Structures are given as C-alpha cells and as structure tokens.
Amino acid sequence: MTDRKDELAANLAKVERRIAAACAAAGRKREEVTLIVVTKTYPASDVRLLSGLGVRHVAENRDQDAAPKADECSDLPLSWHFVGQLQTNKVRSVVGYADVVQSVDRSRLVTALSKEAERAGRELGCLLQVALDAGERERGERGGVAPAGIEELADLVARAPGLRLDGLMTVAPLTGEYAGRQRAAFERLMDLSTDLRRAHPAANMVSAGMSADLEEAVAAGATHVRVGTAVLGVRAGLG
Image (spheres, helix red, strand yellow):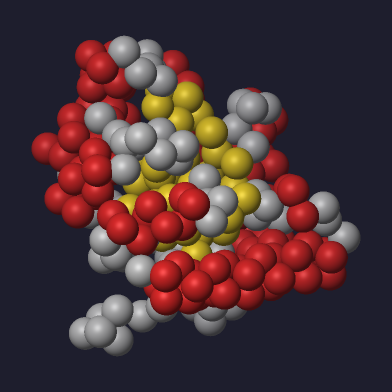
C-alpha cells in the first residue's frame, strides 16, 4: 500500500505541475482550476489514499461501481461527481451519494433527479452536458444536449426543486467539426457558458479536459478538469 501511495503522490504532483503551468501560460491563478480525479474502475482503497493526499473531488461514471465505493468512503471529506450517462432507473441510487451530476442532458432526467433530491432532502448540483458533435436538436454520441437546447434545459433545472444549476460540461468530441480540435471545442463551451450566465449568473462551473487535453481546457477557461489515467494509471485490460 505504501508503494501505491507513493505512486499516486508522484502522479498527483505531475498533474499539479501541469495544471499550474497551464494556468501560468493562460495568465490565470492556480486556484481558479479544480482537479477532479476520475476514480472509475479503481478500488475504494485508492480513493482513500487519494483523500489522504489531499484530493477533495472524485468522479465516477457507473452507478453499480460508484454506489458501494461511495458508501465505503462515506467518512472521507470528498465531493462525489457523477459523470457518466445516467438512466432514470439509477437516479435514486446516484442521488444518495453524488454531490454533482455532470451529465444532465434531457428533461426526463431533470424530473427524475428533482423528485429523488426532494425525497432525500438534498440539494444536488447539476451540470448540463453539452454535445458539440450533435445536430441542432439531437443528442451526442456519448450523450449530451445540443447547444441549441441549453437554454430550455437550463431553465428547467433552475426551476426544479432540489436541484442547483451549476454550469456546463463537455467531452471533446470524436466526430463532427470539433473532432481533434480540443482547444476549439473548449472555447466553444466557454462561449456557451457566457451565454448561460446571462440568465443564470451563478452557473459558472465549466467542466472540460481530461488527462490528455487538460492544458487546452485550462487555456480556454475551464474551472474544473477531470483527470483519471494521469493520476491512477491505466488498469490492465482497459487499454
């Protein structure tokens, strides 16, 4: 376990240096960017080590993995982010542990999240997942609402009991005009965030960038980066 803690500490230090350098290059303060460590596929023991190393935000994308892990780590001072495509039949479970759902992309999901948040007596942060590979009114390949649908969905979240509209999230698209153009994709997300904040000033969170492209996200103005493999490594069999 000591070896694993040392490995995680070294990886965290490298990621921290990358974020700090990207902030400096962009003329931003380091504290403007929050690191979220994506702990999917990794055990609760790693989450516990990360917490001991100062990590405060972790993310998961599958409820069946996240729920028992969050329960096992419920004594730790962590904020849990759900970042995967979310089916309505998993909402009750996710609301039980998630502090923020970053993948809100349709009205039916908003209704389900609101109902369960109210039932649990919780306020749940919500990010709208924006699909930059979607057509005018379609969803993206990996979920997400098309840019044209942001305003309507944002208003729905803002009115929903138990929910708090925190901002926008995107995943750099694999197809469409932004494929292979992460910086341009993240700059587009920032423009959409500016538009959103005209009606919802408090919705200022912008979640973008992962292990391979966090620098581009920081340069564009992201407030949160989601980093997995650069901290935890690549699990055998996952490629």
